[in-house]
Each structure stands twice: as C-alpha cells, then as structure tokens.
Image (cartoon, rainbow, N blue to C red; front, side, top):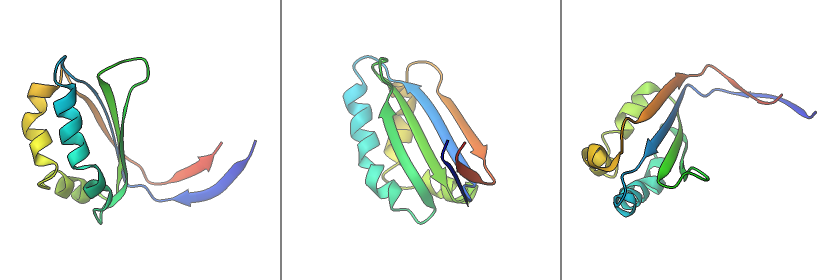
Length: 110
C-alpha cells in the first residue's frame, strides 16, 4: 500500500446528486456547461466537476471543493450559475440530494 502523507486543507465539499426529468437533459447540460470553466476559475474554487452517473442515465453528480462557505455563497450568485438555479425545479425529477461537508484536512492514500 502506497501512503502519501501530504495533507491539504479543504474547508468545504459539496456533493450533489440530481435526477433530471425526461426531456430536460439537453437544457440541463446547456446550463451546467455554461458555468463549468468559469466556476473553476473563481478565486474561492479548489475543484469543480460534474458527471453523469454510470448506468443511470439522466442522473448527475456534482463534486465541488471551495475554500470557504463564503466562496460557495459567492459562486451561487454568479451570472453563469443563476440561470441553472432559476430553472432547477423545472429540470430536476424529485428531490435533489445535496450535502455540504466542512472538512478540516484531507490525506491522500490509505
């Protein structure tokens, strides 16, 4: 087992899982991709990505790391994110599963 002892501060992790309504996939991807690169470039962003869940079409997973809750709050106000938030209830099928974790440190490896 290779253990890496480096620790990295990762104050906030957002993990979200969303099932998109039938017929809304293209609109969701349009809005989600609108903010992808800009979100990664925000000064408070550590990492930002979303994926379609393997074997579960129209189910997407967001994984984001932010330097602080304030950075996440600022992100949600950005003009490339607000269109997605405004249409979110029309796009998502059922309840969104969103969790925000306060992480004090992260160690790579086991």
